[in-house]
Length: 436
Ligand SMILES: Cc1cc2nc3c(=O)[nH]c(=O)nc-3n(C[C@H](O)[C@H](O)[C@H](O)COP(=O)(O)OP(=O)(O)OC[C@H]3O[C@@H](n4cnc5c(N)ncnc54)[C@H](O)[C@@H]3O)c2cc1C
Image (cartoon, rainbow, N blue to C red; front, side, top):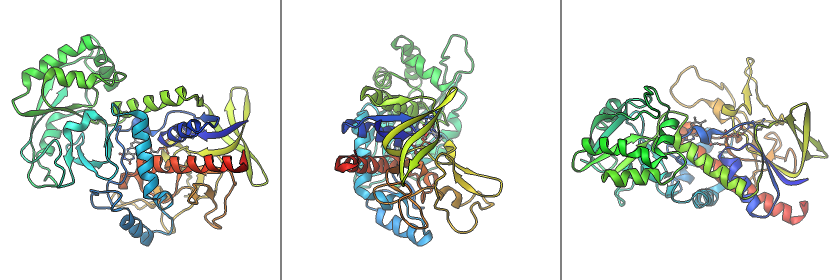
């Protein structure tokens, strides 16, 4: 019997599993595949829009929650975690992975250039994006300010990055402090393998992990950059070697930053791999490629998770369970052709907004995306009809939670880490208090 079974190895499952293990509990982390982190930008969004762009997420949290409460009867996950858990969750994650992976400040958002030349707010970002930071706080200038010159450089063998589009749009943005950037486009050639005309981002990143391959890129960048310019490149500058970017930047001798590209994103993979390694080093017991099909329960207490393994099902016993299996994007929530939404692993009751779930317009929020499981402030799953725990030892964290519009709000990672630490701490204290 383990102390805790965590279902899902996205950001919320990984963070919770590591925290539980560091508190001395035995943890089984069971997942059918990698989570959204692997597909993402490697940034940590706490709260980017409400709907206007947010400069100080935690200062604006109360107003955001009050607006949200007026608009919906489903509490937002942040209403349960509160600002302290957001602060602690982001701090914990950043400290775990270290400054080679994440830098920033949960209190203050910055804007980063995107792969279409827009500016998107986020709180924490990889150090390889630091030279592209545009401040949203007038008291704290960013690396790029009005009049800064940027050369956006495409790699001919990498098709998912169009420097002309990015540079053209980037120069059209009015910066939060006033003024605009100057931006132009240029190209280099860097086949990941000899003669390869169409390389993936991951293959280019792997090639750049090899110090001997970097010289070819450095020479071309030095030849094209003009005095005073900052170089922007697709986020493919090294995969496993966190020093690859810093080495390239130092060799070129100009400020340089990475722009995240459409999924799958190398910065997300770096973060995912780092957290997975930390979990294994902490001796979290990881069950890869294992589909949780259901659970055994008795007297309102979960006893065991049923895991689909070849030939037979395994009943994995634990004292507490954390559902960190994501939302619609990971298949944990499902909408059928009769417009019925269900939670597919444990058949939990869901908080569902009243009225139409999908508007037939792309503009505005889709109520469907706020469907999820309801919890109390300890992240124990409750029945939204009664507010009573469904099982006394079942907790939830991350994308499965009801009440958020993660993509619109840019709150996905903040919710994941805040709810993960909140749930982990509640489990630690409850198991220490007699449930063990
Ligand atoms: C492509 C993409 C881009 C995103 N971009 C942004 C963004 O820009 N800003 C933002 O704020 N948020 C963004 N998000 C959302 C954000 O990444 C997530 O909200 C956050 O990471 C939630 O993580 P999670 O751990 O709850 O779930 P997930 O990352 O979805 O992980 C779910 C885990 O559960 C496992 N699982 C599911 N079902 C089972 C089962 N039956 N048995 C075993 N394991 C199971 C999966 O294999 C996976 O390991 C993005 C997500 C995606 C996918």
